Image (tube, rainbow, N blue to C red; front, top):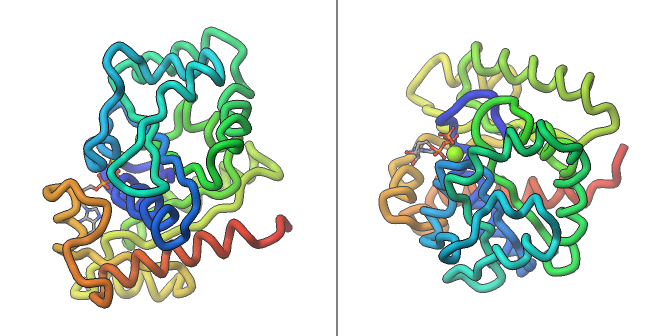
Length: 240
Ligand SMILES: Nc1ncnc2c1ncn2[C@@H]1O[C@H](COP(=O)(O)OP(=O)(O)OP(=O)(O)O)[C@@H](O)[C@H]1O
Ligand SMILES: [Mg+2]
């Protein structure tokens, strides 16, 4: 989950995808909250164990697995965020840990079928490491020409700096069909999955729930389920 901009629905989508993977997909799923603000951890009502610091994860596999917490949902575990993550940038810069996140992902592969990572907004040292370690990057953007442009720039940048790197899955997020600008921007890239702007999705934060406040047949719930299907399809597609 990555976007150059903030507040575009990254955390909402990350939590939803992780929950779908665990429940609908029946896969052992880990949500790794790498945002020091800890919104994903908060949504899943799961904090770090007392005395353990998320940043310690960089120290190695054993420290990392100690940090993983079960959630209230079957098959869904969480590596919660805390404020120590703010120092992770400096840790990464100071030491040669370019491959560390990739190594940690390998360690996770023993216990989990899927790892969903929620990153803070913007390109950073941490984001850069994450982008080198994952198979697929889901990039939500609000459908306006400016954010679409920021996305294209990001995609170009990724292709340049991470040749042979992860596949990108751009997603229209918070799409409001009443806005002509949103409709026309979406029409410019009609193949992209669309997550509508919906009170039921917004309410996930207030309810601290990984599912929208709507029946599974409601448009918002169907859009999130369709996105999960699309992500699974992209992950199972053989690398080009
Ligand atoms: N599809 C949607 N419809 C309505 N509200 C939404 C939708 N997606 C997210 N929101 C709301 O918008 C706000 C920002 O969403 P979210 O926290 O998921 O974005 P983010 O990209 O993770 O933000 P940040 O960059 O701060 O990490 C939240 O209040 C969330 O509930
Ligand atoms: Mg977020």
